[in-house]
Structures are given as structure tokens and as C-alpha cells.
Image 1 (spheres, rainbow, N blue to C red):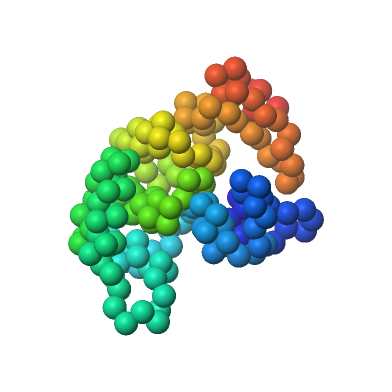
Image 2: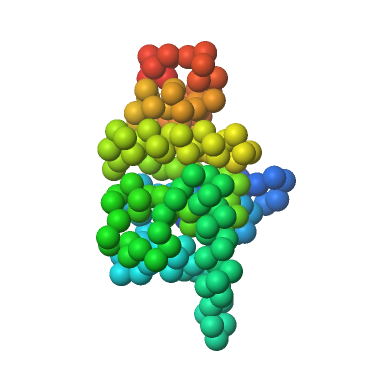
Length: 188
């Protein structure tokens, strides 16, 4: 997934999104192609507000003034659309881990992601937060987003996914419909 998102350059081959080749090793190319990634370890600025974190990296540094009004409206629309309510003026350092993850998801959606990679998204969540996340992910899928859910928790994968791909040694060794498989088939 780090190759898809442009963090790493592939040794061979290329990455295409909707028929368009991405420049290797360029996360901006992936973002511009509609790919968003929520990392297991968040990249955040705890001293900034939710809105400031979401806007970081979205506007030119050469602009004399950022358009926070437009950004606030766009963030509110995305929050409402996907059920990810959060106070845009809250400091990130004052939020729970689950709320901070919500900010990371909102940041990807703010950048117009329609393919969202979630790396071990439940690793830092309570059971209640994980259930809320699954509800949100189902709504995103219902609205047409493609989700790539990376996890070692196979019961969550089978509960959340439509299709399961098992990678080993850099290759896909199994691919199944989640509804037609069991955990033991994925671990053998």
C-alpha cells in the first residue's frame, strides 16, 4: 500500500489508478489521483485545530491568506455526508485517539479521495470506536468509495470486507469473497 500511495518506489512494474499511471514515489500523485491513506500512526500536528490539520498541505504556501471559510464549509459537508462529526475548532491534542483518527479520515476525504487505504485502523481503538468506524466504512462503501482495509484481525476483516486478498512476500497468495471464506482459509 505504501507503493500505491507513493511512499515507496516499486522495484519493477508501475501503479495505475483508473487507467492513469502514477509517478513512482510521489504521494502527491496518488492524492491527485484520488487515493487517500490513513496510517496506523497518525501524522498530525497536535497544537493545531481540526480544521488546520485538515487544511495542512492543501493550499499553496505562496497564497497570502488561506480560505478557511470555504474549507470550513467543505469539511462540514464531508462530516455530515459520512457521519464523521467533529468540532473543527477543537485542538487535536484535546481529542481522543478515535477522534484523531476521524480527523485523518476527514483529511483524506477533504483531498477528494475516492480510494481510501486504512492501515490497521482498529489497532488503537476501543471496541465502541471500532464499531463506529465500521458503520462509517459501510456508509462510505454505500456511497461508492473504494476501501482498502489492512488488518491482522481476521474476524474484523471478514466482518468488514466484501473481498479479501492475502499478501505474503510481496505477492497476493489468496483472493476470496469474504462471505465465502473462513479464517483458517486465509491463514494456511
